[in-house]
Amino acid sequence: MTTLPTINMRFNLHTNWKRIMLSAFCALPLALWAQKDTSRKPSVDIISSYKPVLRNVAKINLSGSQLQADTSRQVRMYQVPSQNLIYAYSPVSLKPLALEQDTNLYLGNRNYVKAGFGSYSTPYLKAGLGFGDGKKMLVNLYGLYTSSKGSIKNQDYSELTVRGTGSYFLPSNEVYADVSMQQKTFHLFGYDHSLFDYKKSEVRQAFQELNLKVGFRNTKSLPMSFSYDPTIQFNVFNLRDKLTETSVMLSLPLQARINDQFSVRASFDGDFTNYSTSSLPANVKFSNNVLKLSPGIKYESPRLNIHAGLTPSWDNGVFNMLPNIYAEAQLQEKVFMLQAGWVGNIIRNTFRNMSAVNPYLAVIGGQRNTRELELYGGIKASVGKHFNMSAKASLLSYTNLPLFINDTSSLANNKQFLVSNESKINNFRIHADMSFISQDKFSITAGFNLNAFTNMVDNAKAWNTLPLELTGSFRWWAFKRMLLKSDLYLFGGGKYLDFGNLSRNFSGGTDLSIGAEYKVNQQFSAFLDVNNLFANKYQRWHNYEVYGLNLLGGIVVRF
Image (cartoon, rainbow, N blue to C red; front, side):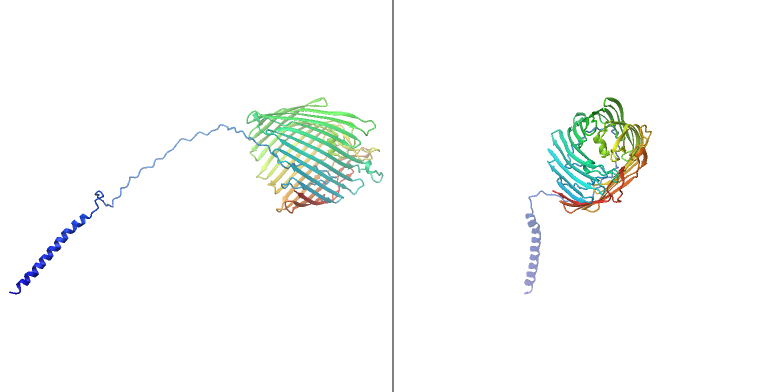
């Protein structure tokens, strides 16, 4: 049959195809195994979702015992370097007849010229020059000239001053010197101008002075903080054609610190003066010598300071033991303080010192020094960072206090003053002062003195003394280039001795001055002063009227 072979052939093909596919499927793992990477060691990877967690541990609180406070006092030594200032400031005393309102501003330049002109035919010229770096050497030179002509005949005044200061700095010390020459000319115009007519040369009161001072002090700390500052000063003072006075003044202050709280100090001072006249019918010549030794010990703590000492002194051979005890106690640290003291002093009544108070003084024929004892108590306070004030009440006892009285003799015609010695006199004084200072941009200061003289022995009144004095000062940089300022001097009237030994009252006075200075640039400034703004022609000394309202303006050049 023709169909059977065909069927068998199909069956065989089908069977063979199955065998081929089965053989290929079985050979596939062998081929894959042959291509396996055998360079690595066999490993087993276990995949699991289990995460081990540590058991919470209870927190351990550590507590230690409190440390004991260290109450031992730490003693630290501080060394303050010497402060070598480039600018030397010299105070200007208040004199009613002299236009000495100094408005020069020290803005960082040591060399300056200040020139101006004012009413009462007043030229004004002041200059300063500085040399040295302030480290090895420092020299400053100053000059001043001013004069005025008043509305009253012979009411003229002039002043010429030349001064030089210098320092030479050694590794541990400083040698310094101060030399000055000064001439001040007043005129005795206090006579009755309706009865007398004097030439200017007949009433001229010309003071001339030459002063030289040399000192030597340590600038670095020594063992026990020992410090010294000896000085010697020579002074020649004369009233032209009338008298000459020469003085030698020695000073040797020493100080050493025992520990952090106690220090000792001592000072030796000697003043030796020779006085001679050339205008009296019987000229006089004498000496006036004072020696003082001032040992003391001082205790210092944060709340209490006490100084205890004595001052043995010899006044022209007469021995006096003077107290030198004072203390300060802080009730609230750096805020409120009590002060008290019992101190004594010998005031040298040389012609130079007395004429600085009253320039219309006549030639004197003798000198007696004043012994002063003061017992005082008071307070000091600070409010905030800017305001400070103090006040104290004092009981003062004077021996040989000079009082000034008008010379009413026919020769003097009431135009000069004599010295009337008061052997015993007491004074109850109240003093107060305050200051408000805000950096260098704004400042107000004020001072107040109230005097009550009692128990005079040789004089009926405390002639020509002031029962009340008030001073004030105001400085304000209103703008960066503009300085505004004001000064006030006020005093209450007292008693003076008139013709016939009659006691009279003299009126008080008020002197208010205002001024301004405008800084154009670093080199140039312009200033204007208005003195005696209220035009109060008061008399500090009887018959000697001050200038009225006056103006002074000019420029300042710095280089």
